Image (cartoon, rainbow, N blue to C red; front, side, top):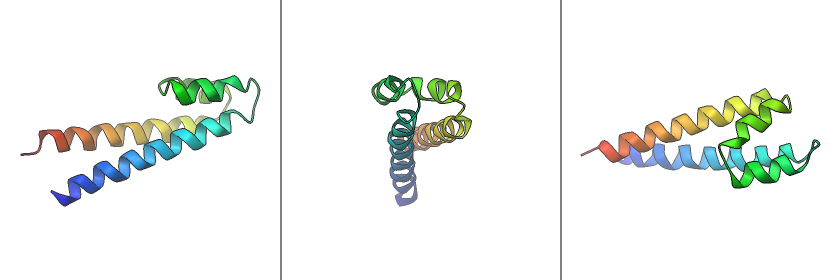
Length: 79
Protein backbone atom coordinates (compact mmCIF):
# COMPACT_ATOMS: atom_id res chain seq x y z
CA UNK A 1 0.00 0.00 0.00
CA UNK A 2 2.75 2.47 0.88
CA UNK A 3 4.58 1.69 -2.36
CA UNK A 4 1.47 2.56 -4.38
CA UNK A 5 1.05 5.90 -2.61
CA UNK A 6 4.74 6.63 -3.10
CA UNK A 7 4.48 5.79 -6.80
CA UNK A 8 1.53 8.19 -7.24
CA UNK A 9 3.32 10.99 -5.38
CA UNK A 10 6.61 10.56 -7.23
CA UNK A 11 4.94 10.27 -10.63
CA UNK A 12 2.80 13.36 -10.02
CA UNK A 13 5.80 15.36 -8.83
CA UNK A 14 7.78 14.26 -11.88
CA UNK A 15 4.94 15.16 -14.23
CA UNK A 16 4.40 18.62 -12.73
CA UNK A 17 8.13 19.36 -12.67
CA UNK A 18 8.62 18.34 -16.30
CA UNK A 19 5.55 20.32 -17.32
CA UNK A 20 6.54 23.56 -15.56
CA UNK A 21 10.24 23.46 -16.49
CA UNK A 22 9.40 22.43 -20.05
CA UNK A 23 6.92 25.27 -20.40
CA UNK A 24 9.59 27.69 -19.24
CA UNK A 25 11.95 26.19 -21.81
CA UNK A 26 9.32 26.79 -24.50
CA UNK A 27 9.25 30.48 -23.63
CA UNK A 28 12.94 30.73 -24.51
CA UNK A 29 12.12 30.37 -28.23
CA UNK A 30 9.82 32.35 -30.43
CA UNK A 31 6.84 32.52 -30.34
CA UNK A 32 7.06 32.91 -26.59
CA UNK A 33 3.31 32.59 -26.04
CA UNK A 34 3.55 28.83 -26.74
CA UNK A 35 5.07 28.31 -23.30
CA UNK A 36 2.27 30.23 -21.59
CA UNK A 37 -0.45 28.37 -23.47
CA UNK A 38 1.22 25.01 -22.82
CA UNK A 39 1.42 25.82 -19.10
CA UNK A 40 -2.33 26.47 -18.92
CA UNK A 41 -3.46 23.73 -21.34
CA UNK A 42 -1.25 20.71 -20.53
CA UNK A 43 -2.13 18.49 -23.54
CA UNK A 44 -0.69 21.15 -25.86
CA UNK A 45 2.78 20.89 -24.33
CA UNK A 46 4.03 17.88 -26.36
CA UNK A 47 2.62 19.42 -29.55
CA UNK A 48 4.37 22.76 -29.05
CA UNK A 49 7.58 21.06 -27.90
CA UNK A 50 7.66 18.90 -31.01
CA UNK A 51 7.00 21.91 -33.26
CA UNK A 52 9.91 23.76 -31.63
CA UNK A 53 12.21 20.75 -32.21
CA UNK A 54 12.39 19.96 -28.49
CA UNK A 55 11.55 16.30 -28.95
CA UNK A 56 13.22 15.29 -25.70
CA UNK A 57 10.85 17.43 -23.66
CA UNK A 58 7.85 16.00 -25.50
CA UNK A 59 8.97 12.40 -24.90
CA UNK A 60 9.75 12.95 -21.22
CA UNK A 61 6.40 14.70 -20.73
CA UNK A 62 4.52 11.79 -22.35
CA UNK A 63 6.42 9.20 -20.30
CA UNK A 64 5.71 11.13 -17.09
CA UNK A 65 2.02 11.45 -17.98
CA UNK A 66 1.71 7.72 -18.70
CA UNK A 67 3.58 6.83 -15.50
CA UNK A 68 1.23 9.07 -13.50
CA UNK A 69 -1.89 7.70 -15.19
CA UNK A 70 -0.85 4.08 -14.66
CA UNK A 71 0.13 4.58 -11.02
CA UNK A 72 -3.08 6.49 -10.31
CA UNK A 73 -5.12 3.77 -12.01
CA UNK A 74 -3.44 1.08 -9.93
CA UNK A 75 -4.02 3.09 -6.75
CA UNK A 76 -7.69 3.62 -7.53
CA UNK A 77 -8.31 -0.03 -8.29
CA UNK A 78 -6.38 -1.32 -5.27
CA UNK A 79 -8.43 -2.88 -2.50
